[in-house]
Image 1 (tube, rainbow, N blue to C red):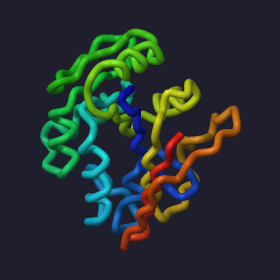
Image 2: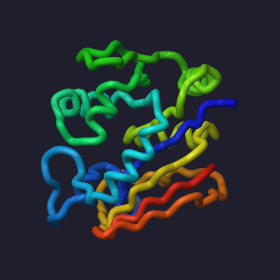
Image 3: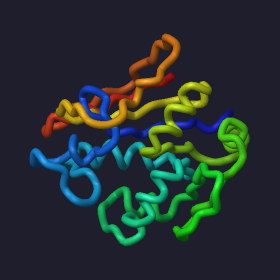
Image 4: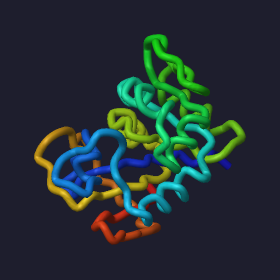
Length: 188
């Protein structure tokens, strides 16, 4: 059986994805650091990452995260992302080191198919919106876990802006939280 490829994406209600701190904050303004979750959102995140032993990151996401996560204590994600095998999809060598990170410069579809065929746990795609979009287009995502913040945000990119064909998703889990966040898990 192939390993499951699961996109874990934080979004506003209207699909904005550029700054999750704007949708997951107790205030009306973005706060420094990672998004602020309530306890139930922390549980959903912990459950999602528990089955993953590899993560795909786009270069832009890597460059942003390598400056924050190696010294962060924000749990449960810090321990996970700092120890998990990270494959960075890029055409250039990585300039900053991060434990268990390696550059992948082969075509993403070939790499993901090969990785799926290797033994191991699930493969997560965290943030990395352009990578998620390309995997979705290529039919290489098995699941999407969407954290939908109770915010309308007119700024930034939209997760599904470039969808070219109709596709029905199967809802497999819904978790509303006290802070108004809704966690949706879809099988593709």
